[in-house]
Structures are given as C-alpha cells and as structure tokens.
Length: 168
Image 1: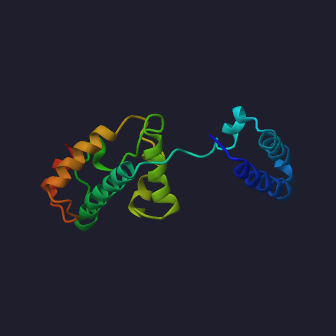
Image 2: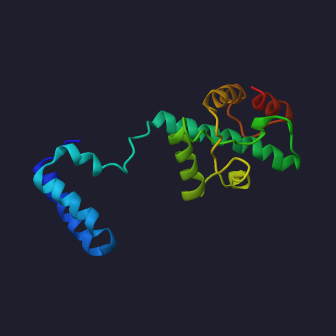
Image 3: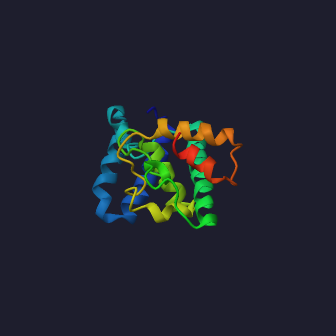
C-alpha cells in the first residue's frame, strides 16, 4: 500500500481519536501512529490488514443468482407443501466452501444475516453450518444455474423443472 503524507496525516488523526475513545486498544493505535509518523512503509500492511480486496460484480451477481435460484426452489416447496428430491444433497442451499470459496460464503452470509435478504435460507443455517459447505460448490451451482436459465430464470417452477435443476 502506498500512502501520501496527507494520507498518513489523516490516518494519524483518526488513530489519535480512536486511541482516546478506546483506551484498551490505545497501545495498538499508538503503534500504528508511530509507523505512520516515521513512514515505516514495510508495516503499512498492518493498517489495511482487516480490509478485503474488492469482490468483482460478476462474483456478487453469481451469489445473488444462486440464492435467487434457490428461492425459486423453496417457493415451489412452499406452494406444494412438500419436499422433493429428498435424497439429493443439493435439494437446499448448502452454502460455499469456507476454505476455497470464502468470499462467496462471506457475501452470502452478509445477504442473509446483515441485509436480511433471502430469509428462507435461515431455516437451513444449522444444516449447512451457517452457509459453510466444507467442500467446493461453485461448479455444481454453475450447472444448476445453467439449467435454471434454460427455464427462463423463472420463479414459477414445476416439479420436473426443480428435479432437473437439483440433479444438474
């Protein structure tokens, strides 16, 4: 990370305020202030350590599409008062792998828990370990989305369509 003197000055002021507001964290903020004041660029990574890289829009759209597809599946189950494909692993949203698909899992959690969207997924949080599938899922979801798109991304699915999507 590169910081101008102006950037450093602004951050120093912020950390001075934070050290006053959070006396228990004061030593940490004072260390960051010293790093910035003395220009120890080798340690600038400590400043942005908690900030993730941007998630590309295409990846965010993918997560939204997967959750919308599962909303359509859940809507079918709700309207017909029954479970289908009970032997199929992907009959409900399994989440994303916490190790290899972390940003996808984090975004799905953000949507469900923070933004309170896709609330139908809350019923599965215990079964899918809070949206952590513990195995890669993206390849399966791509196949399922391909099938769903062939049906026109509809939210009015029939039983045969739901079975084809889940088994894709």
